[in-house]
Length: 111
Length: 115
Image 1 (cartoon, helix red, strand yellow):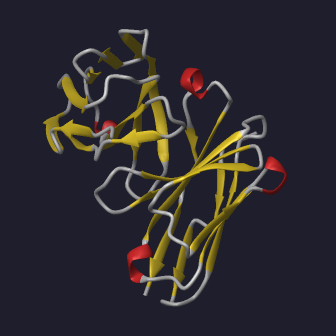
Image 2: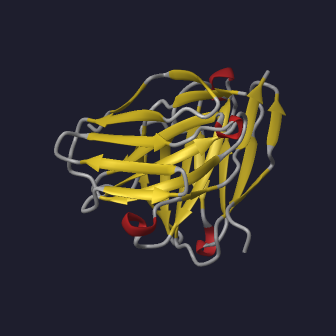
């Protein structure tokens, strides 16, 4: 059974810092991995999708990497801003049809 | 098309009542998923439709829960005889057939509070 963990559970940083969020998964047989952002009480917004054959994806200040063999992904946020404050969730899709989510990392960026 | 729509956004109900939620996926997406999220946790898979066929159900989907997707368009999730443990955010997502390429698009969710 696939299990997904995320470290740290919570993170508070001053504005402008670069930061890394970590995601680990136990079964490396995956189709893809997707990073989402969730604001309090809201739904999920897709940030980046990495196929199993890819090593990384970039969008603006965000960069996500995938090391399938070690069961790890990182989300790098450059020059953090208060508007980046949210919960960040990673989800992996195996050969079934559903994603398995991690518990998330709660990020606070202080002005 | 503005994305995945869910209705209502919030629902407060008394224990023992029945509730029904609706999800309208992106029009060209033939796959539809329901997830449940409790406070401080990641979403957990409930069920999945391809067109009108319900192809997979989680053990979380007890016999009080039923989901339908008539005609392969919108979907409804009904909870009968609600319990306080059903309080959660119910999220709907849709995808194209090549979900492994395109991933999911989520709606804003329906927050259920059972009092």
